[in-house]
Image (cartoon, rainbow, N blue to C red; front, side, top):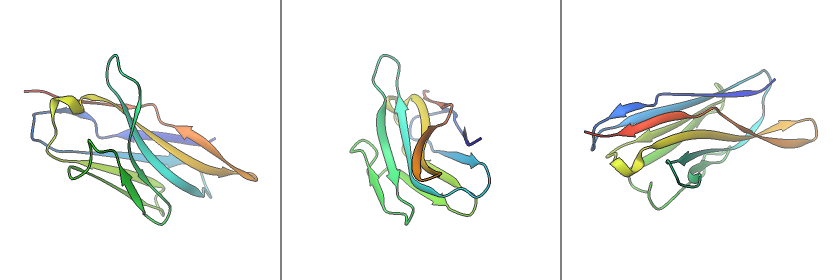
Length: 119
């Protein structure tokens, strides 16, 4: 059974940094795109960053210049380095990935990790 497990969330002051990690468990996985989403209280879930298998990246406007997504295909792990954090970055951050299962790709979600930016 495939699982995505996030870690690295927490409480940080404005201007601070956090690094989120998301590891996919399971053997012999072939993972295509990996993504980070976030959902703040009372708001819809939004896409923050995407990274393809060959490490092409794309960011939401709110993340450009402050966040960096990367991946380790050997460890089946995706990272989100978040710098210059603002209170409006407060949200639950979710990992998402397209993983080859049989003859097609299934989409998987992690359980989420809370990020709180506050003084």
